[in-house]
Image (cartoon, rainbow, N blue to C red):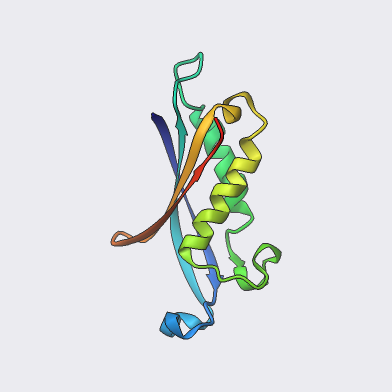
Length: 131
């Protein structure tokens, strides 16, 4: 299995209104480093998983919808908790939706998203695709 990973960062505001989240129940900000890995069983005719520039553009398009936004007011998260894990899943599905109809997108085996909140804490989500 081959993979290509591209990183970008984004900043959000949100609250996690449940007792389990302690002080994070209130509105607060978070800065994430998003690492998006594209997995493929075999390289394409150009001997790559995916063009790095194209991958970066797709990720930037997805993160532009989140960056500097209050996720408590974002329509895609109405009634949902915006935990790091839930955001990783959201980003993976949004990236997959943007790439699915391209030649390289149809050949992807999966997309893995890791969101790093700081150097010592992160969460990931793996989306397997039918390739």
